[in-house]
Amino acid sequence: MNQPYILSFPPIGDASLGYLSVAQQLSDVPFEIARVYWTYYTPQDVTRGGHANIDKELVLVAVAGTITVTTEMQDGHKHTFVLDHPSKGLYLPKLCWHTMQYSENAVQMVIASNLYSEDDYIRDYSLFKSWQ
Image 1 (cartoon, rainbow, N blue to C red):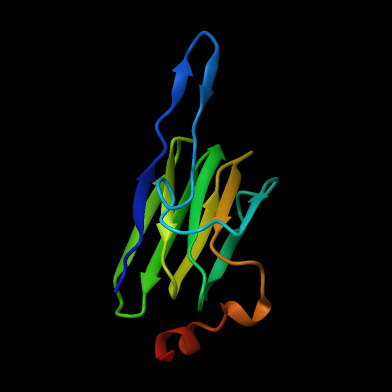
Image 2 (image 1 turned 90 degrees about the horizontal axis):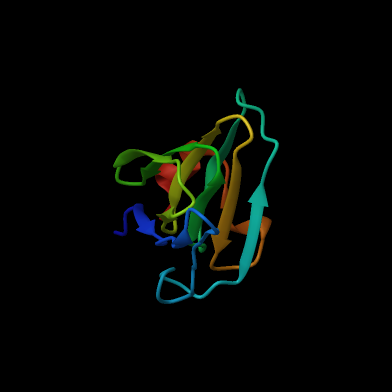
């Protein structure tokens, strides 16, 4: 079973001009990219996520601020990751329950392997734990 892990997107540039990082499919990101979206202006006291995707892999990147991501796999393996720099991302495999907590003014970019489909989401934790 795949587990979540941190990816590195090395910064290119220098402090005098700024930096950029690159995320290319099948090299920097371990899947073909079908969709990119971002979340912003999320209040600090709001927890987002609370779901798993049946057939979608994700990479989460905090392009600004800090995002704390808690993950759980069906076998009970839990992990907490802190995304606090735009040069690192978090790979989430299929069937990974996750929640996100944001710092003030955090911006999260999400790179997804599939287009959006509500049918791909498991939003009930007990159903996630029993999913075959």
